[in-house]
Image 1 (cartoon, helix red, strand yellow):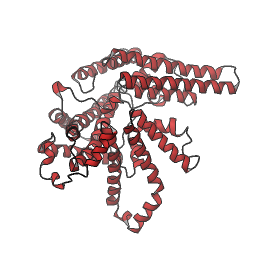
Image 2 (cartoon, one colour):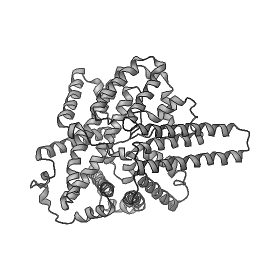
Image 3 (cartoon, one colour):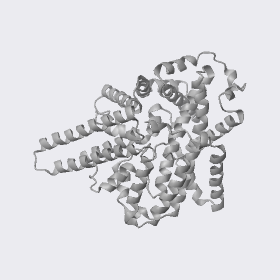
Image 4 (cartoon, rainbow, N blue to C red):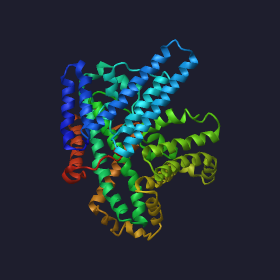
Length: 473
């Protein structure tokens, strides 16, 4: 069941209403039933995969506790615990590989990482093993996040599931949650789906020159609005039910370095890779060469997580290279900036840094978007062919599925996103400021946003909106 479908518009209000109506002792059980129904609506078989992963992680954590409490020697305990973690990793990620690339199971990568992170936290004694299976099952299956994250930790969502006071109805939670969901729909339906028409046309017709460059830049925005849109929907759904989920994005396209951008992009995944891959490899503690090696390994792992193929390794390798090169060349860049007195230009200099960062980031995503490495190289080569700047003003761009009026509206919508991100980067949140507004003003604003989504949203045949990009991962 897609969160942009009519079915979901019926499902979600029913779930919320029943959640607050049934007795408190049954509310988590109700959420578990609703979550299982939501996930299995794609395919009933998915439920058995989720159950297997959940059961294995649940028993694995209890096994770690049993080993710790056993009368065995400390060395034996350490070996058994490492063997338990290693065996679970092989089984889990082997299952992910099979289910992802031979069967295709929606969301398995996300809840598999969540399960492994939970086990690692128990192994490190940073979290207690959950003994209530139903509570742990809800932690894994919670419908706002099961398909596409964010990847939650036991210290966040699981701990909230044990706090009964969070299940109390609060009008402010519902109001805020619905507003966040509305923003998510705006990002997905108004921006991401509209950009997809243009990008698909350029890649489908193998257009080069300015077309390919504009498509490259717009695809970065499409990916951001698509994934940030789903993350906003997840946050909003969670807040409506009284839960606080991890914010996956923090105005990434305002970063002035690639490393800074990645700290703001898909934060639950980058945090997972940092804690369970980068730091165990040694992080930055064993010299710069080892640090750079570890950074490259992390991004290659990220590439493999996104898909099998050379193009994903190139994408991951490029972003790893950007970070290493950025750190190595930092002294040189500072000298050049000082010599040219660029730092005195303030916002202009930061804007230039941001532009370069975004272009490098978008460049790497050509490999992500193209169907193969060969086609990605063809796109890059085509950028220099028939390079005519006049395409930007002679109306030629409007032949790629989006008319002039729609293109202008798209640019306006993107400016709205930039404005909101600028406010958030300064810790000024629109929803917080709305608290002081008259109820009529805030209601009108929400109504305008809703009308914008309904009127200007891009829908497919019979409202079959394109699935979220990260559902494939």
